[in-house]
Length: 281
Image (cartoon, rainbow, N blue to C red; front, top):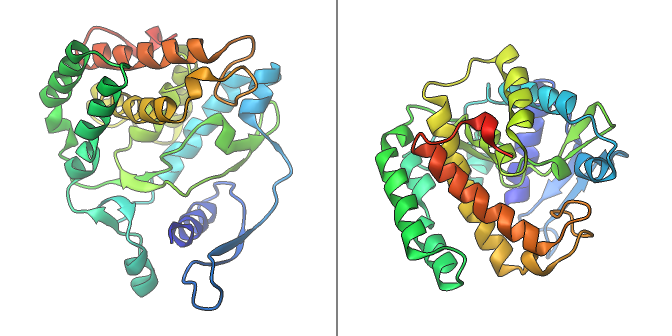
């Protein structure tokens, strides 16, 4: 059903000048046909991850522009938190999250994810203990008075364009109402501190960084990397080669494993005040 939510979100962001494909028609009710469908505009540009792997992307300028877009779509402030309620959207046309407290969304399945990573040998018991302690020490940062639109799957493969220009932001089917640092931290899951500084520079031209920005950045980077680690372990990403979209040129699955673990530990260190964003490699 969430493709109806995605279409509504894309209409909202396109209305404020964010380039997204037009959804010509969508229906997930299965009343007229025994399947859900979505008819979308074809955007004839490469995804930016492909250009980066070819060495044809001006990453700094693209990240600066993407930071501006993130700041602009944060002007959209749905009700509640987390994934959006499809029934409420159908009933009232409003985007309304399923959780009344942001903390409930952030902690959702966290224990289950950590247990899974321990069971599969990705994280040690000591590492999990440090992670939980760091999150608990910063739990007050989850007391949001209101949320904003979060893409929630922000990465270069979900941005289409040229070597130096964004043409479209796609794949809004994971979007939620949440913390303004979340989308910024998602790009921290993949890129260096230098790239994130370019992102924040663009963001700051449109919108001031939220209070307690760095701690909230690390808090969300940590949660996002834990979730990504679960996917990567479960789907066997660490056995893939450089042809796989997540793996850099002249690299392999073992390097992705190492990077994933190092990024989780870096987020935990940052949350404990032992690392700066610019130090991300």
